[in-house]
Image (cartoon, rainbow, N blue to C red; front, top):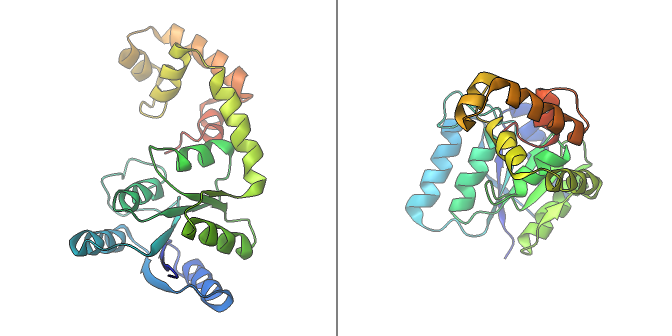
Length: 217
């Protein structure tokens, strides 16, 4: 059975363009659209109430901006949308201009649950290929992004247990003082660990580290 498409993108012009291209160049139909967090919630609640969200695939813009959401603290609320659809059994494809290996890794991790990842810079045919693969029960990652994903995995494996804890803490706490308090160490120790982490990741600062490792979530 051909799945229907749920399209979550907060830019109406781009959303309409994606919808038109999908429906013109394939057998898929976009049956649900959301441009706001409230519209996403409405679709999710309707599926939850009906108990039958089967035969749908959601294409979700990771950079989805929410006027209000339980994930309003997140830089990219699309991750939370993917989590909610995934919890209902709706497979999701992450669609993003952020295509570093870290973002890909985070999107397809068990913490988020996307079954596919496509860069907004990719040709539209790539998005259709992702939809077809996910429809067949496969995971699809755009070929050009796999190298970055492997790089991040290699970097992560070099982290010690304490470095991993600090890396995770950076996603929650804004300042070195907050990280130090959370981990029960001194700010000087935090700075020392950051120097090591930045060197291993080949970056110069916290923002570059979080973006490369996919921690802007």
